[in-house]
Image 1 (cartoon, rainbow, N blue to C red):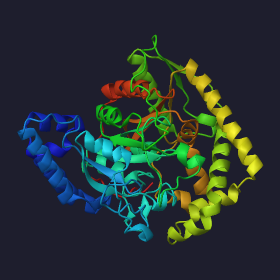
Image 2: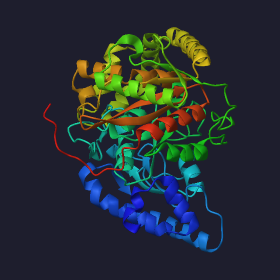
Image 3: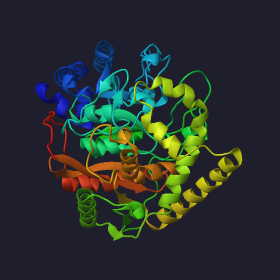
Image 4: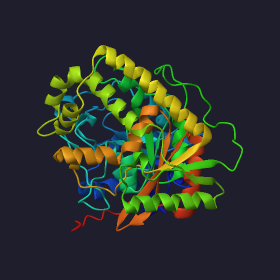
Length: 476
């Protein structure tokens, strides 16, 4: 069992530690050995916390020996995106300017995972300042490689966590998502991920000093876990959910809502907005729809989701207007070529006046209302996390056509972040050597419904990872 500890699901790892079948130190050492073997090939873990992790594991073992009750994630190693504070470790955001920005305390989700017994084993790579594009390449740490195929991006911006989890270097990853940043890399790397409802998990997304960002940054960015199994994702969800005085946005909504009368209606939209979808992605959605039908869901194809193009336009106008005043300073932190993705976005969508910005706030609420009405009729929605298979690294920063192609590909992620509803990315299989998957979107604060449906898919379609890197370069 020792050699295979890193292959176990997080829930099985924790159960073995709690029962005394294995020690937490053995579990951490197994993952550290895996990191030593695999990380040089994929460059997902940026700051390895080996000694800190061993010390935390030894403390866990002492507590168990003393008869103390251990938490639901006892001994489970997890990675933390470079955006998110781990006490005593630099939160670099992937830029050399922040390499010495040592965190004074854990961010709320890190603290919650620790309280449940999980152990941070390292920071994970991301695009510089989460602004350099979708591909996981940072000025400070370089490129992260997709373990399925080195000619394809692992996605982003939480690509380091997705790769670490997919290859068995960590059982869980802690990323964040404002338009697909956990769901797209989950799809591209063959793992599962949860983007929760706005306000479900407490967080602290301040970068420097005590001041909070503006309304778009406050509302759109949500921390979310990545895992190899839906059961592990559920365990992380239960730990992370709930109110916290450090984040007044987090609300005390129960993690599990009242059962809905069945069979539960599920809408299927393979091509949101009608902008095109790759045949392999359409096939993955059909596979997921059939699996949920087999599980007893009332699955129905519907013409489209509400107000896709209007939501995308509003998202862009709001975020650019909020971000524009800081852009002259921020772009200097992105390194050579790191500003291309945002620069092209801002050229296409100039900032609005104060009057127009206030009108957009009303439009935002109105679009959220339309989605609430849609999800009142269909409590769940199956759609793409990305409308193509994994694309080449840096496509979004190459030129305007590449930027638009990537923006279109993740459009359902963008809009569901905009309206604040939860989404679970879950694999559906492997096509042409690359993982495929879908996302299951639900009503606000009904992550439980999304996770239950995702579990039904996993039960029928299986788990794709962990895997050893397959770094052959494609020729197509």
